[in-house]
Amino acid sequence: MRAELRTVHIRQIAEYRRNNRYPKDLKLLFPPGTKHGDSIAARGILLEVAADGQEFIAWGRTVSGWVLGIAGKHGSPMDYLYAGSDGPPGGVESGCWRTDTPPDWRGMD
Image 1 (cartoon, rainbow, N blue to C red):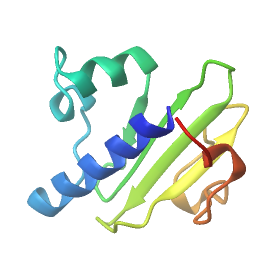
Image 2: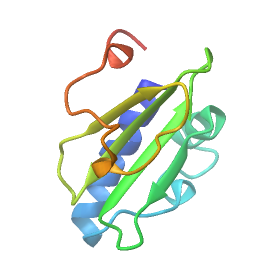
Image 3: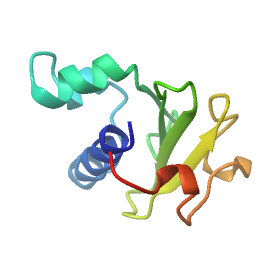
């Protein structure tokens, strides 16, 4: 899950640099039938993008049931990370996102 979420983050940054906004559709970022498209679809990753396209959050549930999330804002390469028992309760400013690496984000995928 961590690897797929990091891939979403990288792709979102690239698209932001091209269009000055984050795209809302994972299928456009990762078409079905491609390595990443099939992996991200299989993981059930959800993507939410602010109406103005300036912030996104992506998250999914791990096999163990734990939720991991990654977010970005204004095209910055800095990522915001989330780990919890439920989906993130809000965007980057909600207080649930961390700029340091939580324990659940460490280790091998």
